[in-house]
Image (cartoon, rainbow, N blue to C red):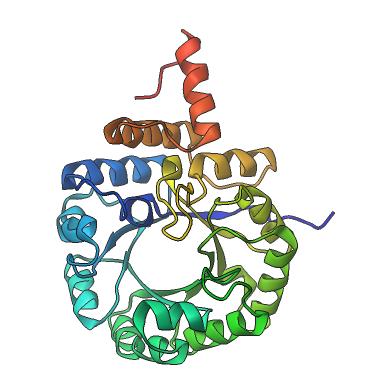
Length: 311
């Protein structure tokens, strides 16, 4: 058995990636409370906003208000995804601590979604990257479709590494390797990370896994085995996969925390508080949380009068 990391960093993406595809507009006050609950739970990095055109992602139209009203904790990074300089300027005005840019590892995905090549799509972020660095902010890059594409299928290892090099050259402090459609398997995950780690330090690579095929936790364990110690997760399993109808999408934070706790990997995050946050937002949305660990813990509390039930 390979040596696993002693500690791990979890990036909570529920407030942005998790909520952005919800059809009914969620009031800013609910989003603020969710972020505040996650802050109190101990996350040091929360993806809280996206400054994209409200025409394309109406759910994120309140991002400025959310960033203004959240209760910030010193040392916690509040990230915002931006598509261009206009988005960057809005994120800067909203006091984002980290700017997130993105590119696909699949040429077919890039062409079908934004009608340009991978190289062209990432080059468009050059000005954003420079402005981010000029402002002394963190810059994070995300590689979508790193383990499979809904249009072309398998994605070559070198293609993922090429995008990582381009993001590295823009000055990214951290790079996410994302299984956008959740088709990755443990062996392929290790192959991808080992290849990308030849171009970018593995301790600054993050795994972003979707649970479409039920492989997310296995893939996280596989990534841990090769030295990855940063992972993205979404409270209550918020978020769907737009390319696989009915898929649960993002791996749930509660499930990842339960896994890490069982492996004695330190996170400094309060699982009980995360369960509370997951039950809170799921109750508001009117549906059961897509988190097995979260729901099990909440049910145990409800059946045990000595424990407070999740709010």
